[in-house]
Image (cartoon, rainbow, N blue to C red; front, side, top):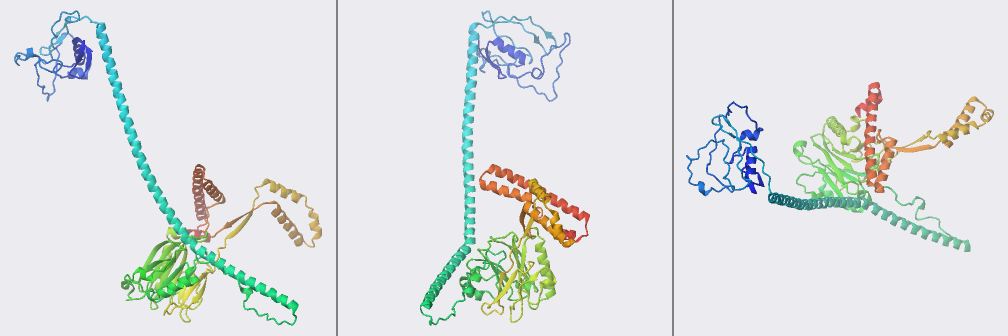
Length: 629
């Protein structure tokens, strides 16, 4: 017994006879070629008496045959080195001869069936007898099998160790990438926190200054009042001792009209505080403007400044017209489009404490009209005003007024039709000269009633809010011929307070029923002189009982509340805020998802309701209003 290796790759600890059995079953030839018939199909014995016909493909080229005998290790046997090719010409598909006999019991010659494909005749050999391996061969076979299994297990161990190293390496790489991403996100949020903190400081700075000013002013007034009180008490004591003492009752200070200035600054009022003027060249008035910003409270607390005829060009550096604490946005006049060599131009100064989210919407310049539209979303934004669209306007004195008004109305309506600006509040201001915007847009109201140039009112301010501003005229800047207009917010946020009785409480309804059942109604009849008086008394008493027994719900409604934002949706929103503040993120995510789903349903229901109204009454005024909004 020894390790036998076949040319097909098969190996096993067996005898040469076992190798030949394998080659006979698998169709392996001695020269390394495998029989295609045996490889593709199971072995079959052809019928007796019929010759075997083999067909070769048209493109079949037999491989070269090496007839030199070789050992199992691939070396040429020395005894066969002198055999020539002529002496070894044998049929290609002939069964090889068995090895020479040895004087052992296991190497007896076993005849086999041989096929001679050259003649097609079948040759049969006598059957062979089975040979059983000895105990030494079985022990060697078991030892070889054990070695093979051990080698296979060691190979598996090696594979698993490699896999473990690969996993450790991949985990380390993933951890490094996650740490990098963590640092990037942390840096982004740190920058966002810094930006928010800076914005918060800028927004709170005017309030802190105002708080300190009020505190200082109140302290001064209290000290003065204390001194006056002590002085008056001394005078009273002197009067008690000397009745002839002459005392003047005239007061140097009118204390009845003295109070702490509690006027809300423009930075925290619902509407922005505005300064408007036609400066007639801004560059030569910057020194005076900077002085007013630092010394005049009206200027320092103004939400924004709007100047027309700035006369700024692309050659004017920004540093020459900067104001500390304000953001400059400018629309310089284009000489080619306006047809003027100089003049024109509009600019806004936005107070950093009022707003930092500013977006330019539209710039236009023509011989008749110059406009500059911006969108501002202030820090302090009440529920009624979400954002402000500021439109600076300059109309030349010799312009075509009708054409300028028409162009301005088209631009305003075009901006308002944009989806992101439908709920914004529009404020239009500037030098209109002879133009009048309500001739084109009737819903806009003009707030500047005082003269702005001589006895004429040329500078206007328009908005759709009724009685929104009160205009005060100040001295002009520099040599400008237009006064400086201070627009003070006069409109306060006035939400609608709605009250409704909650009849869903069964206990309250039962209490009302008991109260009405136990009432002596005859008393009302006898105490009344007429049917009208009796009716008024009974209805008033029923209303009194309802107010006393039925609980009342109160809520606030603003004019820009979404109609689909129902009370249930608001309650869900409050629950979401409470879950967020509690820190329970699982509950917060659950309530947030429920809120989003209910909000979508509420919008769909409101949309369905509007479609039904449009289908039922397409020509009603309410429906037409819905179609245009």
